Image (spheres, rainbow, N blue to C red):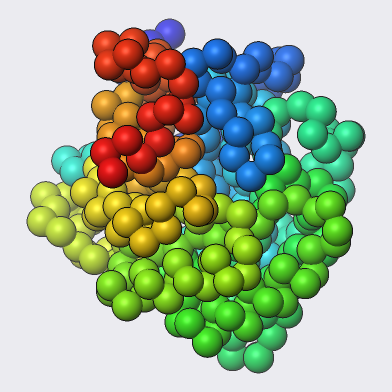
Length: 350
């Protein structure tokens, strides 16, 4: 059945209820064999072989219930979480809003999840052995009261030690606008302390560590983050999370608090990616996220320096097979331009 026929029914429901309904549907989907690497689209990042560059961003599968099935929809990898050490309910509902006229979403979930221990037990059942299946990243964060209690960094260390055995890579999320004090970890001194602790907590031979940052950064912030990533040997940088800015929006929900994602984020996240590429060159892989809904937008992000891309909000408007469509469109664009592999395309715009 076409998603265009189903979408009005889903949009008649509260956004969070529709989200849970989609998760339930995917849980019933058969688990397919891992994707075979596509000769044109497969790429190596941080020592991991990705069968294609289109990934599911964190936030959709918060508790690790369906990430291992997303390759069945065409995703080259999936990132689950954000997971915190302790279970927490997140912010009061309603906390998820569709901005239909803007093809956007605002959320203020606040890292609602069942905790790392429960997730680890669940993930372990389909992750034996790690590396012998679809590529899965695990996104870790701090509990809501961690900053006030002085244990913000300790929460990330706990996340590394708990989730590393189950992850192809770990993402340190310091960019959500919905957890008090979290974005303050992007300041240079705080970031140095955090990355020192996180990298020390990773056991020898442990998974690569990625860092996820916000798009709402000043030039000095970009410089500090880039330098810290190099100094602490971070394995990749994810650019970017949701924005707290509000460009011109038409929806009635435009004034809701939280992080804005979807189409209005496209230009901002692309601009921030270019900033980091200009500073880092090819010294650090970049992952482009934010406002990607077409193969052309993914192509532009890769040409600007992203080795991989991720999407989430666009699924709300375009449907579950968007990853397959983007991969087809990427291949068509590459063939048009005579580009043989994704690696040849990364950063080609300089």
